[in-house]
Length: 215
Picture (cartoon, rainbow, N blue to C red):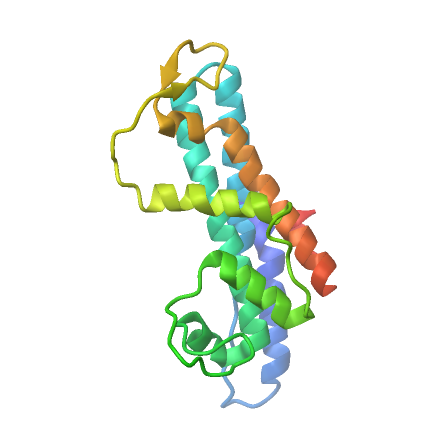
């Protein structure tokens, strides 16, 4: 199934909602949205599968490439999802929250904190909706934390040399670079599992419906 065929039902859903809000007033504006987080999840799954296939055939260069893409896409999916939940909860005040001017309850902060981290957003928005918290010391939050750390290593890559580490593969003897040991098919699979685990826990904590595309 093509991406457009997957996205079309969601695009129409948002269009219908917007049309209903507009009614017959010619002066009202209409807003629509394509669920990009769904596409990001689908792409992350595809690249995770590609990383696993590459690992099985011993193509570790392709495994590295596909794993990096999976991690970046997974993190982007997580941010897109929680931003939409925040916008639904905060409305136009979301942008002040996102800039670190107010807290999740729309109360001014005594000191501007800067942009909230992705992990902070997930914790604060979830608590703002449900008055319940993620347990940061347990799964799935621990896996999510690992995903964010890997995403940051890629996004803010320093390129510094480091000591070689043992190879994670049976078909590669000796040592490899830290990057090759971190960005593996397993890391890619863990990234996808992190999305699934966090959304399922979010559903449990908030009682909100789990998106159809994550099932």
